[in-house]
Length: 237
Image (cartoon, rainbow, N blue to C red):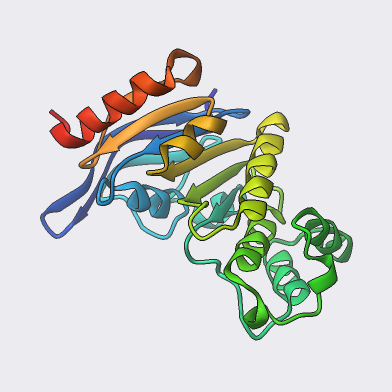
C-alpha cells in the first residue's frame, strides 16, 4: 500500500489550473523525482503535499489519513526541505532545532538535537546564530530541521539550489540513507543530472499534468533527456 496517494488533484488560482487532475502514488523505500520546467506546477505540488495549500479538487491521503481533514496529524508524518529554510535567524542552530522539536513532541530532545547537528556537521556551530551562517550552512540546518521528528515522508523542492559541493554531497547521502530506512521521498527539480542520479522512480510534470512516470530502472539517461525536452517543448500534448 502506498504511504502517499494523490487522486484527481486540482489546484486553481482564479481561472488558472496550476495542477490538473494529478494521480500519483508514493511508497515507502521509494525516491520519486518529479522533473519539470519553471511554471510546471512543481512548487504548487509540494505546497499542497506539505499542507501549505488546500486542493481545489481531488484528495491527498497519507497512510490512509486525508490531508485536509487530518492536517495537523499528517504534518507529523512529513518533513519539508525547500527554498524557505523556516529557520529563525536570531536563534542559534540548537535553539532552532529545539523549537521545532517541541512542536513535534520529539522525545529525548537534547540528544536528538545533538544527533542531527552531528549529521549535518554543524555541531561546532550549535551556539551560533543562524544569521551568521552561509547559505550552504543554512540549508544543512534546514535538512536537520526537516528530519528531526523522523518523518515518514520527506518532500524536497529544488533542494540543491545554492548548495556548495560539500552540502550537496551530504544531502545526496542523507537521501540515500532515508530510502534505505524505508522512508518515502519526493523531490521536485529541473536538474536532470542530480534527480536521475538518486531516483528510484521518475516523473515529468508539464503544464500541471503528469506526462511521464516510470521506474528509474526503465530509464536510460540520454534517452530520457531527449524525451524530457520533447515533453517540455510540446507541453502536455
